Length: 437
Image (tube, rainbow, N blue to C red; front, side, top):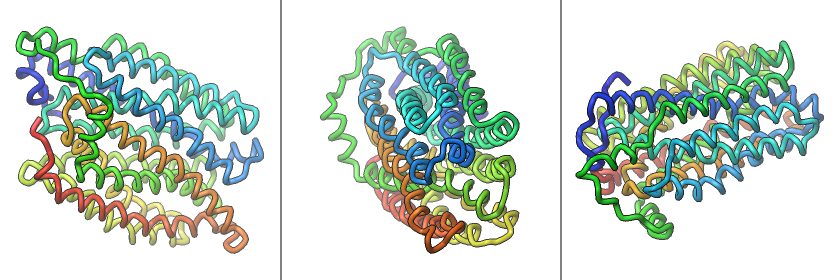
C-alpha cells in the first residue's frame, strides 16, 4: 500500500495531506486489529490436540469448539451490529474498539477453562466480540478509499487473516510446548486490551470529517433493514459471491484445523513442527495470495470489471488437483511444498470478493452487505467446516484408522471446484451491477 488512499468518489472532495495520512494510519491500525482477530480465533487450531488430550475431548467436540461455538453467535449478532454501523450517527471506531476488548478478554478466559462446557462458553464470548469488527472495518475502508483502489485496500486489511493465522500457529505451537495451551491463550488475549485503546486514540470516524465539509451537509437517505436486504439480494452477483465465499470458508476453516491434526497424526510432527510448517503454508503463502489477488483485481478490473474475479475463479479450479496431491504425499516436506501453491490461489479471493460486495450496494448498506457475507462464511464455513470435518473423521476411523483425517482432506480438495464455478458466474454480472461510487 504505497499509493496515497483517497476519499471514495461521491463521499467528499479530494483529501488533504492530513486526511490522506489519517487514511493510511487507519488502514495500518485496522490491519493490526484484524491480525489479532484471527490470531485469537485460529490459535485453537494448533492447540487442538493438547486441548483434546488434557480435557478428554472427542474429534466432534473439538470441531464444535473450533466451529459452531464461535460461529453461531458471530453470525447471528453480525447483521444487527452492522445495521448500527451503517447508521449515519454511529461511531464505527468505538464499535471496533469495544469489540476488540471483548474478544481479547474472552480469549484469555479460554485459558482458564477446566472442562468442555467452560471452554465452550468462553469461545462463544470470543465470537460475540468479533462480530462487531469486520463489517464496520469494511465500511470504514470503503468510505475512505476510492473505488479504483478498493480491492487492494480491502485485501490489505485481509492480510490479517494469513498473518494472524501464521502468528497463531507459531506462538501457539512454541508456547504450548514450553508452558502449555492455557498460557498460550492468555498470552495472545491480553495485548488486545491495549490495542483497543490505540484504536480509540489514533483513529477517527470519517463521517465526522465529512460533517465539517459544507458540500456534505445534507445527510444521505437512510435505508430500512428491509430496503437494505432487498437491495443486497437483488444483485445476482452478490448471491453468487456469497455462495462462493461461504464454500471457501467451509473448506478453509475445516482444512485449517484438520490439516494440522493431519500432519501430527499421519506424519508424526510435534505441535511446534506442525505449527511452523503450516505457518509457511497458511501464513506466508496466504499473505502473498491475498496481496496478489487485490493487486490483480484493481489492475485488470480497471479494463473490464469481469476480471476483478477472474483470478479467484480460475485459481481455485487449478488449486484443487494440486491440493489433493499435497495430502496424498507420504513425505511431509513434499506435502508442505505442494500446499503452498493452492494456498496462494485460494487466498486471492478476499480483496476482490469483498470489494465487489461494497460496490454492489449503496454506502448506507455496505456494513450490512459485509455482515451477510460474514454470516455465510462463519455460520456455514466456521460453523460447520471444522465440526463436519471432525464428524466425518470420527465416522471414517473404523475403516481408515489413523488416516481418517487424510481421507476427509482428499474430498475437501476437490470441493474447491464449487467456489471456482460461482466466482466465474459472478464475474459475468459485474459490468452490469457494480456501482461507480
